[in-house]
Image (cartoon, helix red, strand yellow):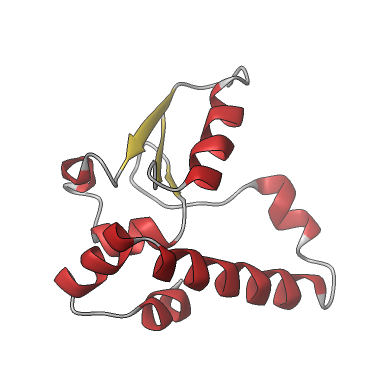
Amino acid sequence: MLTVYYDGKCGLCAREIAFFQKRKASNPIRWNDVARAPETLAGSGLSQAEALMFMRVANNKGQFRGWRLLARLLQFPLLHPLASHLYRLFAKLRFRAYPHCRLAAEEASTTAHDLAEKG
């Protein structure tokens, strides 16, 4: 089973998750909205702020992983650094725009910049 941690208070994030929830998955997926139910992070090793910064996916062993197809595409020279930079920039701007994200960062004694760099 895969577990997806996402920010359900972010309109774009919620639409992205709704898109994936409509798709038939080969394995069961547990969808955890960490903005509304931060207790779902218990035992994950993630802070709420980290999970709000980037959507995270963990396998049944608790290992975080990305999408295979996306990973393959990002192996092309220059594409990975460019995509990574753009996503981190978007994530920082989105994170700063939402009060619940800023509050989670304050509770974790961190900043949007530090979270984006940590990735």
